[in-house]
Amino acid sequence: MSVPSESAPIQIKSDTWIAAVCSAWQLSGSRITEPRLRVLQHIVSYTTPFSAEHLYAVLQQEPSPPGRATVYRTLERLVSAGWVARIHTNGTEMGYIASWPGHLHHLVCTSCGQVIAFEGCALEELLTSLARHTDFLIEEHLLQIYGRCPNCRNA
Ligand SMILES: [Zn+2]
Ligand SMILES: [Zn+2]
Image 1 (spheres, rainbow, N blue to C red):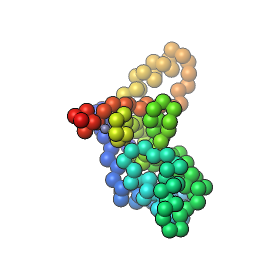
Image 2 (tube, rainbow, N blue to C red; image 1 turned 30 degrees about the horizontal axis):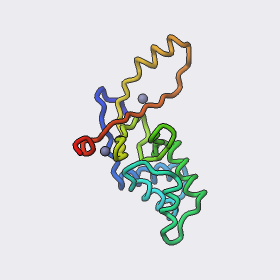
Image 3 (cartoon, protein in one colour; image 1 turned 60 degrees about the vertical axis):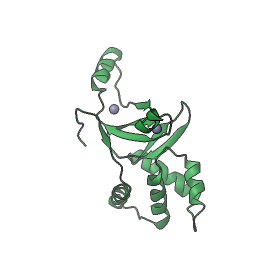
Image 4 (spheres, rainbow, N blue to C red; image 1 turned 120 degrees about the vertical axis):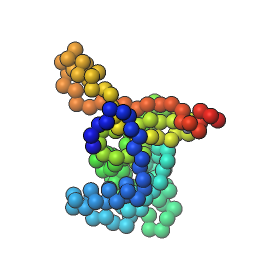
């Protein structure tokens, strides 16, 4: 994914997301089992950050639910590949939301919890200057933007 000069919001469409995750898994030789597919469907249905425990609890309400280990392992695997992002909701609490691999950051509504993924990170200059001044080899950065979405700011 190339980085555009403008910050562009990324739309995560359920069907596209599930199909993309499944084909990535197939490429890496993983079987798409029914429980795993069900985990994916639930993950992408969240519009605000969810906890692993909440996801697990919701899945338990269905027939032949996946075990806790399956849920946690699937989630971790999705996070490390970029399909799911960790969202810091209020300082210490952490939630998850479906995302897309690549250099993305997230805009979070502090009122309703809606999350918008966007690409177009303008930190390059800062990171270069920081590396020059500190002699660090900069490997990663974390950026999350908070604000109020159009619905909440008009409420
Ligand atoms: Zn909102
Ligand atoms: Zn960035």
